[in-house]
Length: 116
Image 1: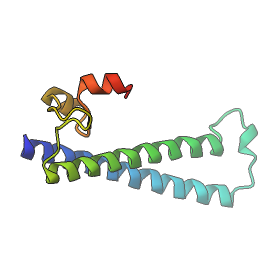
Image 2 (image 1 turned 180 degrees about the vertical axis):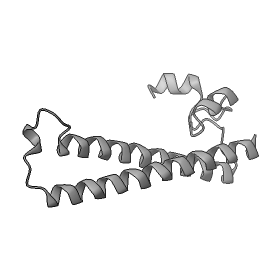
Image 3 (image 1 turned 30 degrees about the horizontal axis):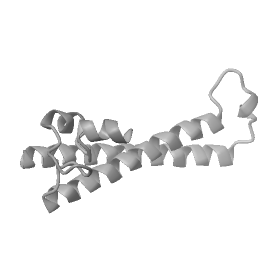
Image 4 (image 1 turned 60 degrees about the horizontal axis):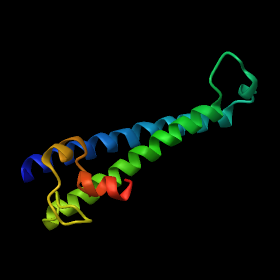
C-alpha cells in the first residue's frame, strides 16, 4: 500500500500544483485586463463580469491550495508511518476510503461521529 499510496499522492500533488499555476496565470491575466480596461463590465449583460470571474478563479485557486496542503500532510504521515491510521481512534482507515480520499485522516465511523 505504501508505494501505491505514495504514487497516488504524488500524482494528486502534481495535479493540484498544475491547477494552482493555471489559476495564478489566469488571475494575473485578469488583473492585467482589469488595469488596462476602462470598460464598465459590471453592467454588460452579454458577458461575465471581471468581478465574478475573479471570484471564480480565486475559489479554484483556494481549493487547489487546500488540496495541496492536505496532500502534503498525507505525504508527511506516510513518511512518519502514520498514514492510513485514524487520527481519532487509532484504527486503520479502510483501503477503499483511502482510494477515494487519499488524504483522509479519519476512518468512516469517526468521520461520521465527528461530523467531518
